[in-house]
Image (cartoon, rainbow over all chains, first blue to last red; front, side):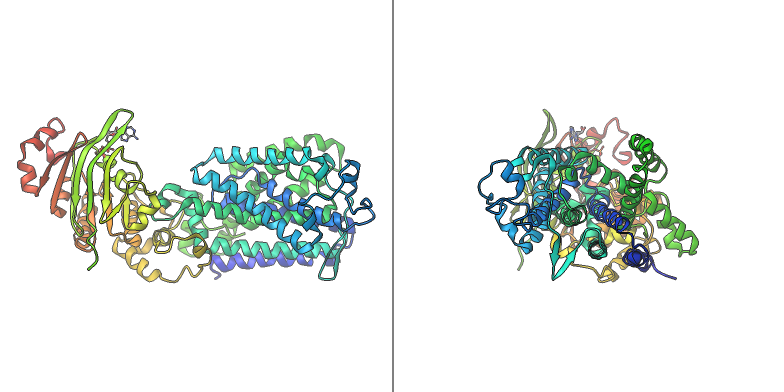
Length: 370
Length: 252
Ligand SMILES: Nc1ncnc2c1ncn2[C@@H]1O[C@H](COP(=O)(O)OP(=O)(O)OP(=O)(O)O)[C@@H](O)[C@H]1O
Ligand SMILES: [Mg+2]
C-alpha cells in the first residue's frame, strides 16, 4: 500500500514522464509548439497554486510576473538580431522608428544572456516581494489583496504600452532571434524548445513540491486556515506570505521567459487582465490546492480554448463557456479536478482508516494526490 | 540565576471608543504561579489577556514580563518571548490534521528561510505524539482538526500550547463546552502543569477553579475587585455584590 506521499510522487513522476515522452508521438511542428505553449501556461498556473492554494493569497496579478519574465527574454533575444532587425547603432528597429538615438541604459545589460535569465527571475520576484512587503506588513488581507494585485497589474500593463519607445508599446517586442543556450538552438517549432519547457516544468514542479513539503509549506497552509492563530505561535505571518509570493513570482517569471521562446515575441497581452484572471480559473478547475492539478487545469482549459477558437462560432461563446465551467466547478468541485481524482483514488485503493478521515469533503489539507 | 520572569501589569487601561473595558488595572503574577482570573460577564477578563498577548494594544499603562516591556511588540514577538494564548473560542487549524496542528505549534525556530529548508516532518515528533497522548488525542493524530468534537478541540488547543512550550500560558475558558468528566480531566492536567510554567486561567466554572486555584483574582467592570484564596474570595462582600443578579459566584 502506497502512502499518500509516495502516491503523490508516483503520480507527479508519471505526469512528467508523459510530457517528456510526447515528442516521440507528436512530430507535427505546429502541434508540438502548441503543446509547449500549454505546458508553459501550466507552469504559470502552478506558480499561482503555490501562493493561492497553499498560502491563501489570491493574487489576481500573477500575469505581471509572467509578462515581466517574457519581456526580459524578448529584450535579450531582440539584441541578438543585430544587425538584421536593428538600426546602424545596434538599436532595435522599433526604437529607430520612435527616434530613439541610443540604447536605453536598462537595455544595455541584456546583451548578456546570463544577465537576462537572472533578470527574468529576479525582476518579477523582487517586484512581487516588494508589493507583498507593503501589503502584508500593512496586514492587508482577503479581497483587498486581490484588488491591489490586480491594480498593480493594470499599472504595469499601461506603463509598458505607454513607453512605446522602450517597450514596443501595443505591438510588443517582435522579430526575435532564436534562443541559444549551452550551444543548443531552441527553435520555437522544434522538439528542442519543447524539451526545454518540459524539463523546466518538471524541475519547477518538484521544486515547488519540496516547498510545500517543508515546514514553511505547512505553516503557509496554517496561515491559509487561520492566519491570526499562527501569529500567536511566534511566526511572522507577513514574512511567510512575502516568501510565498516571491517564490511564486519567480516561477511565473521563468514561465514568462519560456513563453517568449515558444511564441517568438513578447506582448502586453502577456500581462493583461484577461490572462491573469484565466490563471485563477485554471487553478480553480484543476484544484488550487494541488500543484499538478493546477498544471492540468491550465493545459485542459487553454487546450479547450485553443481547439474551440479554431471554429468561428465558438469563439464568441468561449467566455460564456469558461464562466459556466468556473461556476460549475466552484459549486460542485470545491477542490477542483485534483480533489475529485484524489477521492477516486482513495476509494480504489482501499485506504487506511486515517486516510478516509482526511479525504472527506470538509477539505483536503495536503495537496490532493494529483 | 536567570531573572525571574514575573508578569506585571501597571495601571493598564483599555478603551474602545470611549467604553472602558479595562480600567487602571494593576496585576502581578509571579513566575511559576497558577492564577485564576474570574469575574462576571463583560468584566474585562478576555480583554486583559488580549492586552498581554498583543491582540489588543493598551490605551495606557505598562505590561512587562521580567524586564521586557510588551506594549509595543507585535503578536509574534510576544509569542517568541514565551507567551502562549488559548482563545475563548477554540482556535485550531481545522483543515490540518491533529499532528500537523502540533507541528505548527512546535515553533522553536520560527524563521521563514530556515523552515523552507526543513523537511523531515517525522523528526522530533515523538514528543508531540506524547503530547497527543496526554490530551487523549493519540488515536486521532491523522484526523482533520475540523472533525473533532468540541471538547477534543479544546484539548487540542491546550496541547498546541504545550507544544509551543511558552513560559506563560494564558487560558481563556479552557473548559467551556466540556462535559463534567472532561472538565475533571482538564483539572488534573492543569494541576500537573503547575510549577513548571506560569498560568493565567480565566474560568467561570467555580468547581473547576476550586480544583486548581492557588490565588484567585476577581475582576469587575474592568477593575481588580479582590484577590486571595478561594475561601477569602467566597467570603468577600464586594465579590458577592458584583455577582448579584447573576445567581451568585458559584453559578457564574
Ligand atoms: N473590540 C471591542 N470593541 C468594543 N467593545 C469591546 C471590544 N472587546 C470587548 N469589548 C467590551 O469590553 C467589555 C469586556 O469584554 P471582555 O470580553 O474582556 O469580557 P470578559 O470578562 O471576557 O467576559 P466573558 O466572561 O463574557 O467572556 C465588554 O463589555 C465588551 O463588550
Ligand atoms: Mg471572555
